[in-house]
Amino acid sequence: MIIRFLLTGLAVVLAAYILPGVSVDGYFTALVVALVLGVVNVLVKPVLILFTIPLTVLTLGLFLLVINASMILLVDYFVDGFSVDGFWWALAFSLILSVFNSLFSDLAKEKKD
Image 1 (cartoon, rainbow, N blue to C red):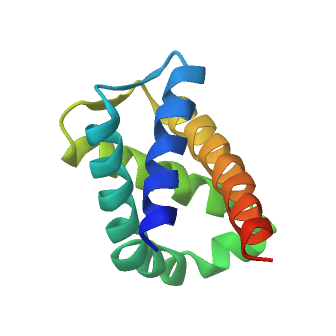
Image 2 (image 1 turned 180 degrees about the vertical axis):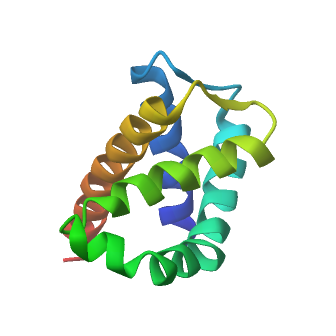
């Protein structure tokens, strides 16, 4: 769990490095972003998903991308040293973060085997 947390912090730094509309002050700030994003994903995201089920079904699940971008913008509001320039940068950041987390989790699984 700690390794996953540290790898998520690394993914935040890498995604911010790739995207010009996202900035992170340092690795400690990236770890705070990872922590706050985890808390927001556990507490707020399920409520939003529950309230938007009809819209999610209507858009064949694509509205979940909007919810993910909203979670990134919410973290931007709460964490100093982390900034996202708008919705589209938040959407791109969430997609890149998902890809990095997927790659890192695959690498962690290979080491376990």
